[in-house]
Amino acid sequence: MNAILALEDGTWLRGVAAGAAGETSGEVVFNTSMTGYQEVLTDPSYAGQIVTMTAPQIGNYGVAPTDRESETPQVAGFVMRDPSPIASNWRSHGTLRDYLTRHGIVAIGDIDTRALTRKLRSVGVMRGVIATGAGLDPGDLVEKARSAPQMEGADFVKAVTCQAPYDFATSLADTVAQTAFGIAPERRAVRTLRVAAYDFGIKQNILRRLAAHGCDVRVFPASTPASELLAWEPDGIFLSNGPGDPAAVTYAIDNVRTLVEDARPMFGICLGHQILGLAMGAETYKLKFGHRGANHPVKQLNTGQVEITSQNHGFAVDADSLPAHARLTHLNLYDNTVEGLRHTEKPIYSVQYHPEASPGPHDADYLFRQFVDEMEHQ
Image (cartoon, rainbow, N blue to C red; front, side, top):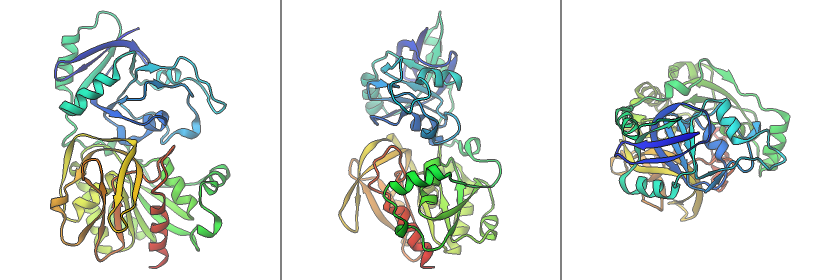
């Protein structure tokens, strides 16, 4: 089936339908990961975005239930150069095309993703539309792209957060797998630690990593008052990843500000990092084309060590706006943007990247052990 991707600057590309039939709009971004397309599709941080994969062939190893970061795909649309028609892997439960079709994700293949990525790097991310079918008018689709909602000022968290608190339960298979991944029993928490996690669009692997380190995690909806989290008497607070403009999530900023005053250990990732920064008095801004991929170098400023990290974000904390009680801890070596910060007087810290990333890299998994240490020493 014919398909077209149209951008707000007037650019349009013709390809073939590679998922569900129909039309979708969103902010067109690119991800440089070589693997992990199912994790990308199901990451709630991609809500409202049409994701372009820069690796040429996508779908060759199929999809598997254990590779999901949430129950269903979260992207607004998907763009590929060479979508594989078959799936060849012993873990596979089906093809990517069938998966996208079953979940209603409009996708396009057989287009020049290299040219598209170069444009997004030069001009910046743009709103776009993918449409499938016969008789498509590129001009009409460009106009639809121009009228699509802006990412700036948009609160996508409300659409992806859970509706009620729940306790995360890990299976025996998960426990065995996570223990095999570098967490020996003696490295787990000495006692079971209670972690209250704000769900701004939380990934399943974050919950698995916390559980693997010996934490009982209760997940709370994004708008839950801080008093309700504290009433559960947690040992620590976790602020999850998520989509959209952090400055638009004002209710979360207010709640985190209260939790900062409480001063118990707190750890934030991605959107949680940005919300913590705002709660501490910093400002955020939108990046030209964001950081999305699994090969981003980040420097620990206290040791000089460089980590290779997985990232997915379009906003960043402004380094020049950091207040006196916030210390810069990690720096992006591509563009010198803020990758981590820490409160100078309280056990509160955050990182912009994803230390829990599956399929990886795993250089930054030490941050979970650091969170456990902070809670055990309170």
